[in-house]
Length: 124
Image (tube, rainbow, N blue to C red; front, top):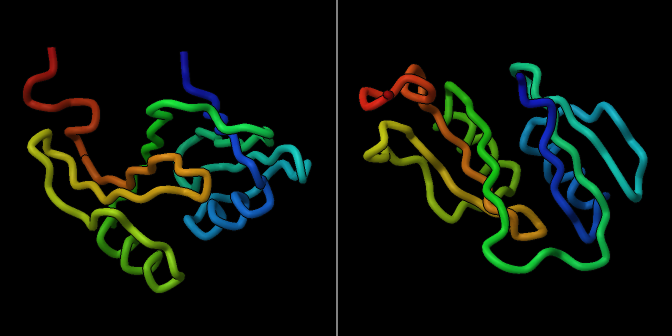
């Protein structure tokens, strides 16, 4: 089994599309204003956004995007006007992470984990 895609909800898919293009995702399906789908720049996963009239309530979701050059990516995104709630820092679980929110307040974690992503020292 392989992960095909993650779909998130948005109040304004056009604005969300611009945001995720700025992050570096490549638009492959354009059914604006209701739906778009992106390819991630690396790997085979895709990411889509679906128009809703009301966002879900509660904790919401967290979206993780991995990049081997995290610090450089964050610096480049800051130059493009992307604001971060926390800049890259090493975590006790051996990942380096930076945090931000998209326009619909979805929590995004940009990270670099190397071999520890799937094979941390405590893997069973």
